[in-house]
Length: 465
Image (cartoon, rainbow, N blue to C red):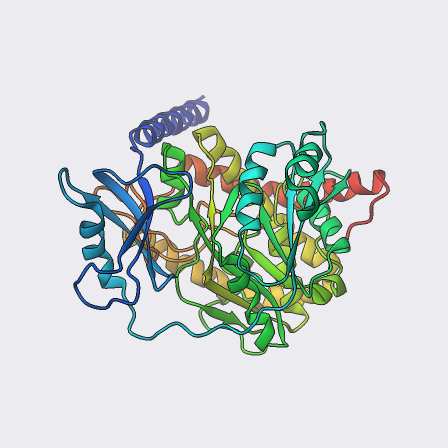
């Protein structure tokens, strides 16, 4: 009886803690999203400074602003600024933004190779139209767009593409449900030397495709590139909470991951794939991705595995000895989930996708098992260090965090309990325990979900990778 009472007490405490977390969550107010280009200026003058609202946002008004800072068009950082009543927003934010200025001019880009963009979608024609409009505005000199309609229920996606985009966008249908299956269908039909993937809930910066694919022109050993993902809106508590914990961003420092020279700060490399980027902003050398068999169709959203398809692709390419390049100059704006229930689903799905992708890697490439086991002790020690940092309230810049199929990058916050997003060099806003528990439960489920997804594919006559 005593044990039963203790269990009930613990359950009641967890429920009360969850109620408090949801109450704190509901108290998060909206934050404006904007971008400010300082031009070539390095001084205090405001000449050449351009302030623009984020995609689909109204002009900036007094209040909190999540600001992307650009220098001569190149993203250099983000910050959280406060515009007082009666003050000129551009002047106030420019004063804050100048601390992010860089003295070295951005490197000139080579001519990017011919590219293909694959957008997988399912019954979200309105969002898809917004994404396609931004993709058609790209400054890349030679590219195509392929929309993959995944297990459609209606003809709305096909009708949209054929009615509004005519011959500018190719339409294909993939009847097997799941993001990886849809991506593999796109991979099979593209014509570009490089294939880029993005989601139907993004708005791509006009230079996104050029910046993402240009590195392939100068590095023959490059197999994959990923880019920067920032929030298009921070209107709901869920969107603010997600971005305050890092969102999908991986910071503003370019980085190349080379399996020939494993990074010292990544003890589980290459299995810490969530550090490399996210599926909403990734590109592969087409021949390389085809050579490794594409994505495992038993992973990804829309399957019982819940996610992990992008992580699987990253590791398969790295395991082939190819390099991966993260470039923050390749930017897309992402429309985050909007409700607490969305975050619960997302947290569980991220946990499941993480262990599902690891299971997929070890099932499909059992030769990698000794390398994975050899890295586990160092990875556990690294995790303990991060846990100690979090307990001390110092924040961190690691882990999957709260965002992205590839996980949250480093996040930022403000002094008032870290309740809003800011820079991307520290994380101060704690991920709610309820969401952390759901993520752990998802991790326990992931291998089971992956094996169930494989069985479902076999029953449908589709082979897993």
